[in-house]
Amino acid sequence: MADPTLQSFILARLADFCDRRSREDPSGEHPVPRLLDKLREVEPPLYKLKQQLLEDAAADFFRRAGASQSDERSLEGFIFLLQRYLSPGDFVDAVFDMTLERLRDPAARLRLAETLRRFAAHRLLDQEELPASRRQSDWERLVSELYRRLDFPRLEEIAARKPLTHTRLAYILRRAQWNVAEFCSVLHHTNGPEDFFTPFMLPRIEGLIAACRRFLRRLPKTR
Figure 1 (cartoon, helix red, strand yellow):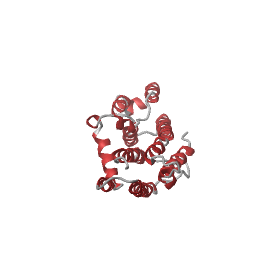
Figure 2 (tube, rainbow, N blue to C red):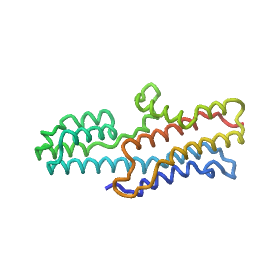
Figure 3 (cartoon, one colour):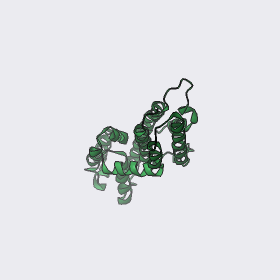
Figure 4 (cartoon, rainbow, N blue to C red):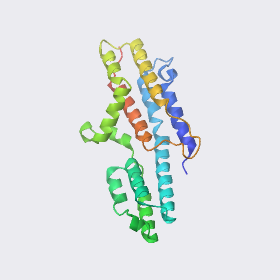
């Protein structure tokens, strides 16, 4: 059963990233490494929740199949959901034998469920550690779209106009944090079992983290 406190923890870490105190340090430490650390703190609860949501969806689907409540439409919906949660290779293996006929056979259904339990939810952020030429095109498109939506290209341009002082960096980071906070305003804490992040929103949270990382890493050094 998915733990709702994980979603709250994710939102809290994103709020920390957007907090002005995350870029202020009386010791004079550079704020960018600290902000990158805030983003890394989102990953453990995010991927734990993603795995739990995958397991819950699979358990519910196979329970319904066992109660003869599966039809072509529900199977197509489940396959679409798996495509959102699994890596391309795991997805192909998971759905290779998934048919209504096999779901109606108790032994075959059990084998399908056991096969699916071997797969972990896809960590899309691992794409960021690959060279750009090896990243999945869908991932690259998502992160680029969010990068533009967060107005990072314009902030990059402002940063490159002249030497980046600490004052100018503080202004640029403040604008970036405001933009991220605005994006996160659509996210919310769970109010029940049907109120978790959807398979549509989860990759966008991963893409948000990736876009922020790219922006922070592209900033020139301060002078």
